[in-house]
Image (cartoon, rainbow, N blue to C red; front, side, top):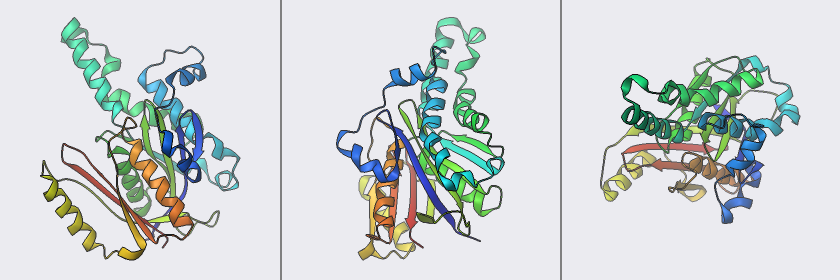
Length: 279
């Protein structure tokens, strides 16, 4: 089974289109992107949650159209896997509120969670003529990491050749371009080495730390040349771990570390761990 390579990581944050190499420029002043700017991009269209998320995804990957590597890819073979916290949480509450106010027989169908959650990823495919698989996940703040893991499996199993995978929230987006290691169009930034996503339950802090330590020991890490990042809670929701990935990719590309482990764990007991490395 071939390794899965990382070829690009793009963001739309702080109302800017950023490459992973620029991610440190926003670290000291991290904030949610201005929804008003996205509304202007929509030119007066009803700015529902799905519209804002769709535009954030499009803004994140738009600049790569001018890069040589992207021009050599057959767009019909690209898949999209997007994770989101807000795409599920907000519609669920809107749906429930609508049922309370108007009764279950008069609920607005656009509030139905799955319909809203899938729309941003689907729109990205339609607008860019990506014609392979399209998936949207809603699994808490680990959704972006889990999207990357699902994309890894798609490529490893031969379902997709390339996948844009990452996170989409109301306040921004982050997308990583993955493909097979033997691609001759561009040199990979890094490779996906190990990963796991699972429910571990509502454990005490010490128990969580013990579980993570045990898992990492199974991966035989070079502790002197690796780093471990536990993503913090923030207003960026599932984009936060994707920012941590960007910071790790900078160090990996500069040969400062051989691998980096990004961990996302929430209060509901969902744990996601992803290891990136140079080889």
